[in-house]
Length: 235
Image 1 (cartoon, helix red, strand yellow):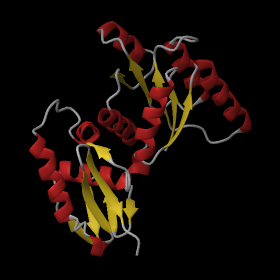
Image 2 (tube, rainbow, N blue to C red):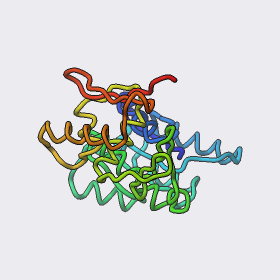
Image 3 (cartoon, one colour):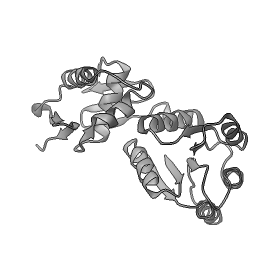
């Protein structure tokens, strides 16, 4: 999916686009409301395919969040989901954002796992026909995110939901060291703390159930004092 991200904070833009890219989406970032709206205007004039979703920081300085959503809705299909981010957790601000036409919200600072989960939930609701049979393949492994099913060489691997989420996270980041905190935020989204051994046990189960061994072309290794990395081995 093509997702537009609006934030004046370039580091926040980079973080969000990293999370969305890891989930298989195409991300385009903007640093002002006017820049985003001008882009949407040009897309309309040229009759090009536009974005499938908007992720908007509600506190940009050049335009109010309500105005950005209103104008964006005029240029996009009304079914396109809008997720807004805010540093204000008061009920009045959240109600105002949802009343303006946004579909969901997040309280800053952004948590990677929560962002990925909320984006995926909004996309599933907005585009059910495009996500119902979604498959992501890595060699002999075929992930079906919506039912939470993993196939290997045509046979289904019996996984819990946490094991599936962990396996998909590792495969989407092949070759990249993942910190324990990143894994925690991505897999145990709403659980503030988990025992250290819990993560290690899940990693061990994923390694064994998926047969992540050199003879199968993959190796799941610990990164000392940091986390884990899934490596794809050359033939």
